Image (tube, rainbow, N blue to C red; front, side, top):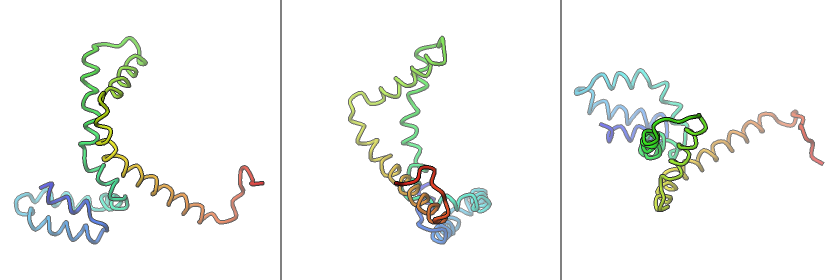
Length: 147
């Protein structure tokens, strides 16, 4: 089922996503009508997700990248037992996070998972900032005027 839903999430526009969802509904509608009703009812909440770049959507949809970061943390807390202060607990979690990849071989995997998404977020915020500045025009007084 998730393989058939993937084209809906990877669609470049709302129209393309709607077409892919119709294909999904024709295939899975008889076997599981509740899932298609749920998706149809939640379509308005799903559409803003399509405004994100594909790289950001890939990280959001894939929990593997997030789970690989979160999985060792409960084990690190259980191994210690109790903590005298909150700072001690935070320190233990920090050290567990730093020790996730002691050989540094996973750094390349981390980069391939997150770097494209981080660059996409940066591009998105630059575009938004430029749009806001263009909308303001020259009527905005600068807090620190240029010399």
